[in-house]
Length: 297
Ligand code: URA
Image (cartoon, rainbow, N blue to C red; front, side, top):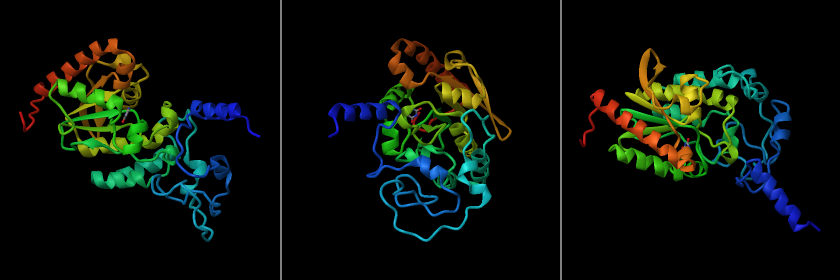
């Protein structure tokens, strides 16, 4: 007979390690799958190669299938994922991501390439791929860290509580989602909203870099430390980086970038809204200096 306290302890332990949401009816033993020799067909309940989350992956037993042909060396999962402390861009996944992202000539093609990319293990636990929201023709592009729970459910960036605050901050300087474009460093939610690892960022960054290249905004805003440090390749924290215009280089073009405090941080530290307000005013001023005109103005 199982003790109810043991069940509660087990639930608490799962929540603590980030398993706060059931995404399938049956559990999947990811450790056993990783150990599976390459080329062997997945056992019942294993994801089909290339299957995207939200399209049936890990949501129940797969139909019986013939053994898959051996994967090419370049697609072997064991070599695909970088170790957590590997430098950005050094992983096999990062190299594959760069090649796939580089082929995309439009945002639609880039989104499709991202959705079919299996080089980041976060995809397996996320419900949705969160690509972008807002107006891709907008002169201002904001880049956050990673989807949270609400974003993962809805498939759009910044739609939860921090997104509501972001909308209010933008409204204070006359902006809204029709006048900006929003994406994240990572398109998949880290379980339990934990911080992303270096390896996860390395695997996904080429897509974001190509994203910026295709959109070519006039101004960039990095929301939070992970975004600012990644885009600027800097080690300092956001409280040091914020509030000063920096430069993001993309394909020979220098785009002014303003690092700002993340809205989620502002919700936890309302006193810091003073600094955030200053940064929003700096953004507004720069929009004027760049001669950016919105059609409704
Ligand atoms: N936090 C982020 O950094 N991005 C989102 O999309 C939501 C919350």
